[in-house]
Every structure is written in C-alpha cells, then in structure tokens.
Amino acid sequence: MIDVLLLDVNETLTDMESLRDDFEAVGLPRHSLDAWFAATLRDGLALTAAGAYADFRELARELLEAQLVAAGIEPSDEKIATVLSGFTRLSLHPDVEPGLRRVHEAGVRIVTLTNGSVAMSEKVFTDAGIMPFLENRLDVSTPQRWKPHPDAYRYAAEVCGVPVDRMGLAAVHPWDIDGARRAGLQGFYIDRRNTPYPKAFLAPDLVVPDFEGLAAAITR
Image (cartoon, rainbow, N blue to C red; front, side, top):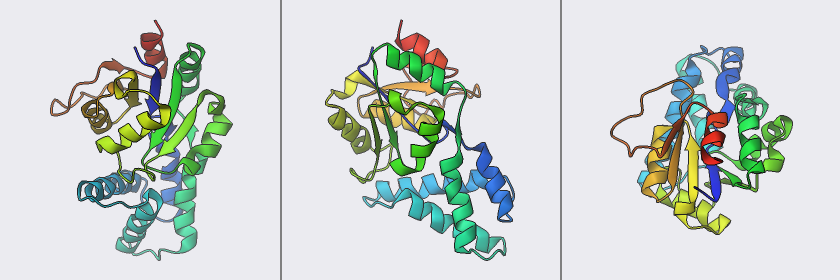
C-alpha cells in the first residue's frame, strides 16, 4: 500500500494528558491545556495561511504568557519552563510501540513530521524504545510551512525520495489527514476516541482505532 509511513507526533504518538499537571503546578486550571494547545495550532496555521512562519516553541511560549497574565499570574521564566519542558516528559500511547514495531518489521519505512521541533520528542522516543524504528524525524522548520500546508508533506516526501502517493500520513487530527490527502498522500485516521470524522474534510483512506489496527491493515 505504501513505502513510507509518515507520523504526526503531538497527540497522535504522545499522550499529552500529563501536561495538565504542569498547568496546575503553575496555577492554571487543568483544562487550560486544551485552549492553549488549540490556540498554538490556530495561530501557527493562521501565519502559514498568511505566508509567514513562527517557531512552535516561541509561539507556544507567548500564548502561555498571555494565559498566565489573563489569570493574574506572573509569567516567570520558571513557570514557562515548567510547562514547555513537559513535552520532553510525555509518554507514548500504549498502542504506538507494538504497532510501529510490526510496521517496521514488515519493511515499511517510518518517518515523523511535526509542527513542533524534532528536539522536543527525542527523549520521549528514546525512553519508549521506538527510536530504532524511525528512519528520520522531521519538523516544519525547513519548509517553514505548518501542516496542513502541502509544502510540509511534500518536503517529507522529498527527504524520503518517494512520490507522495507512496506515502501515508497517520494522525489523530482530521485537518492533518485532509492536508495530507490534498497534497497527494494517503491518509490514515487514528480514531482512539471513536470521534466522527468531519464531512467537510477529504475522507481518510483508512480509519483504525489505534496503531496496532493500522499495522494490521497496512501489513496484510
């Protein structure tokens, strides 16, 4: 079906729930994580749509500072670091390692592509034991276009030296699946929460409950 499996990182591979503890530690409600992460994606995608670019960490930092100020909390460097460093302490969803192991053993090349930075996930992947499965880890700093801009996916295909139609993106975000499909890739929706896929987006080529289900589907 594909030569290269392209992976989204945040939420698709990593379980971000532990970041709620970090928000609570700096005095913000645990649910603040949702608004902050959504705002970071919103502003990054808005800048991309306008033909501009911002680094994920810097944008996330500024939005976190604004959130702290709005809550009447001094946005100290220590508080900012407490939250942002939480990305390096995330765990993977339990289905990721066995699923990727099976994909890797089947000879499918595996590459990550994130709107964040490659460095943010290095410790997480190493600790979880999936680093040997990954041929390459990419972020959008080179094309300077956040996903779902087509240039981000085409950049990954160029690095891998494959036509876009021989690459499939796995993600939990429908907007990411839609962007990949419009760029010519196949799209694999990881639907852990049994969430209906929006009809406004191009439909995925596969809908699976987790990476073990994806591995079974693409290695038959």
